Length: 436
Image 1 (spheres, rainbow, N blue to C red):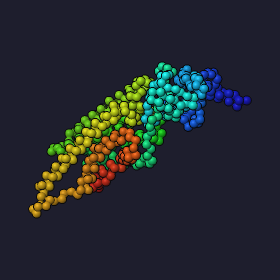
Image 2: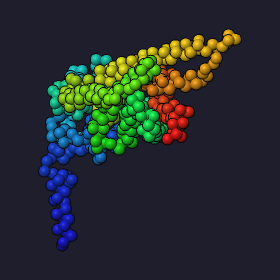
Image 3: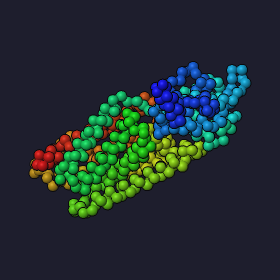
Image 4: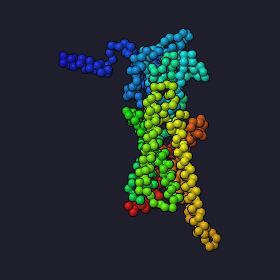
């Protein structure tokens, strides 16, 4: 008897908090949410309607945090049947299939006379005569804020990211190398000058950016995906600024006659970088917050927390908040690299003229391999390779381009290893460590 009373109490408690379905609301009772891989390919729109679910709204049970909004609305679609007749299909009577965003998405709005939706889920777009299967598109969740069903908004899956095996393992090793590099620079007093501290700050920003990327790939940050995306963008932006500061410090260190450093110079650099980085962060936060439900402005969104937790930089609109700004900073770094190398070559040429031998031959001061390593070290410090990273974001459908993209991405996934080899595994750093 006690067990029966306890069981009744437990069921009533779960029903109160929504864990057990009750028939108190027949409209909500007919619909439920399931994950993408639970829908068979033969299922038509009477079995499941695909709703795009941003990464930040994904729930552990495969649903989305906005599902209750859709259940309580009277959204319906006009479906063309096999006998060419039409019938209304209501969202709240169907299974809402949550499907994730892809790397590159196109949002389009279609009025009733601009598309035909068939029973099997295929949609025909009249304007450009495209026929999309149910796997190639999904409905945007915020239809209830538009003039639906007079106009429907769908997201077309156009392209996906090239998968490169072993990148997670390579990134993990690279992160460890970043830690060792930062630790050695902070441990050796001679390396803790203004240039060294700027370099450490830059490496720290790169480390945090790729750390967030890695744990995002492993799906460890879904509970605070949006916050992680904004933090990643902030440190990503700060990385490019620190690279510019490092390029300027290196050029100044090479060309300046007076090598004395200002007492608060690093503090001024830090205030500049962190302050400037906060401005674009605030802009994209406002854009995401204010425009997410405005379907007319969706294509301008940075889409933080949609495909991944980080900002989406494969879209053409990323030229405003990502690619354009970083291209300018990278181009400035390349100019500083050219000026620095020209000054070094000019100085060495003058030294060679002063050390000219009596027999008419010139004393060889450096070996070509050492010169190459020096230039490569400078190129790495100023972040010249990051310009290549921005270039490979451009999508070209060619085999040679895909190979180039893979090589550049592998380079940056393992960038910490390159930094450790070029900055730590050299004779001068080894001597400082031995003396320490």
